[in-house]
Length: 226
Image (cartoon, rainbow, N blue to C red; front, side, top):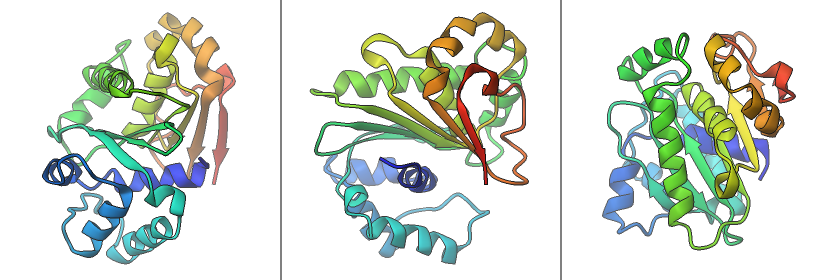
């Protein structure tokens, strides 16, 4: 899957009631179903910075992509005021775990500040636990991709660095995700050395999140500014 496709999935992670729609569809829910829900007005967009016209365009790009439309949701984390995520699977059993950024000025913002001084945070650890549950629940696992925007990008990076063995991530795309504390970089230097090269970090011009805290550039991960 391309970086562009992963970024499109990052955008739809901001629909706050995907978990509800997934449950109502008896867990038989696809990206095609999500697109139809959007057209029917059944999804709540919490990303106020993106206009309705822009979201219409995002959905149109997804609708034109057969590979994305055929993805099936295998898990959606509950929306508990903080950052949420979901897992998708394709016909080749590849898994895509996507983390959303902050929905609002919620407990996630407190978690962000903690991440500036501590080795890890509650939401980072919860993201890793959720990610591992997605892998455990899959009968067959192909390649594993993780991605996220803003705080979701930080969570995707954290998962990629910390997951090993059968949970090892094959590729991570972080879109404007913030960095880590000095204590994290020191404690997990070996994990960064081992898994950092799996991470691509895309940082938009004038974005104020990706430049926060210590980034992973020195570890060998790829970065681009657009």
